[in-house]
Image (cartoon, rainbow, N blue to C red; front, side, top):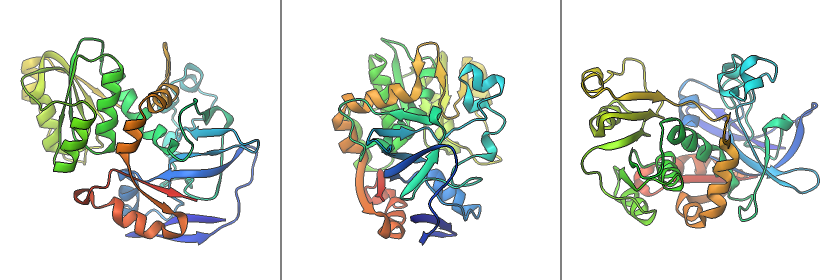
Length: 310
């Protein structure tokens, strides 16, 4: 089968054996490119890339795939907090384990999520990053009637915007860097930041975005940190201390008292077709994956989510 393998600083399309083993066999139909893929390449990954995945089972059932597997045996997995499983660092798709940007992939049955009506499998690679955004907005304490701000308007930031709106936020503001991101934010109902917010989501992964998020949080508010910040990042301790800003780092997704982040993310996408249209800006066949990665890296040119279709 064809697969996209890391070949730092880029990628290459290679032929590899089809996956074997006891897990569910999935024909991959869409795999989107995440910013973390470039981090994996930076650190020298030669694994098969891809953790934002959707496809079909042998009977044709369309599914999305949770990329956080867990061991299924520990206390965290039993409680549904598989994002806290100690094995997660050893099974990270694309960096410590082969991912699924390939024609076929196998995943544990628990990680296979059937798609709701209204969400096409060609678009469903978006479920994984939307679940990441949903988890962050939820754990930061978003509730109906709140003012929410998002700092960072890449795909994850735009998904966080949509998640906050779906959770009943009275207003969602978006701080964006590029004009096309501002336009997309407005299209999705965002306002320009003004004043203080009950919840602020940092979705850019930079020190400046972290400090801006702390500035926007109201006294006693909360700040959800989605970005993977580099070592040596200076924390806005003085601002957080003076305002008693509750800081909630966010990792992946899980199940919780009111459902499953992945299911809720899929339902959001099914109910918001305009969100899907806004997020997927480019599609490439797997044979053109090298060009897909080049385009996805250039955010200033308008790329939001680039999908590779095996």
